[in-house]
Length: 205
Figure 1 (cartoon, rainbow, N blue to C red):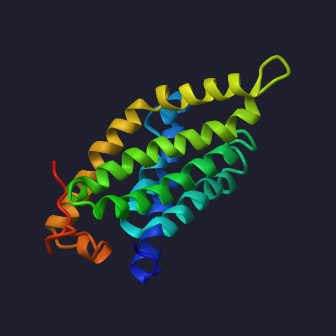
Figure 2: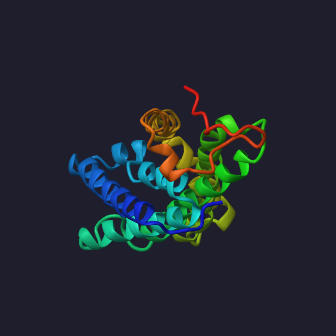
């Protein structure tokens, strides 16, 4: 598992965090909060960072992206505390889990070819679960229990972001495939090889 913070990885992490903030701002500029939630533009760079740069830089990217957005918009987006705090936990989980699970799946010859896709799926579920667990505290009222709020938050975290989920599962492997064909992927993922064959990780389309 990658633990070294190389210059390439650190620069890539900073770049992806900036991309997430900028793209999210573009979506919000249309004035439709539901549209931004549907496509979840800030999720995409964090997940990609986790896969490319490893779990620790993925976690860092997930923490700083919403913080930078919050500070750059004067505290408007995401709103504090019910928006910002759950989102920090969610994105941090995305970045960390995507990097960690990709490494886990690479160690199994049955899953190494699809390691990145499987890691993305696990990360998306884990991040949304954590968002619901934390976010339920902020939408709970005197008339509703924590578990009722948790269920509402959990269902909403999947149904309101379905388009983003589909795009992330399709586009991130496509980007990895393009990086692999261009000989760039190995600079990020030198350990991406079969447990039994000294071949680079194959991103199947």
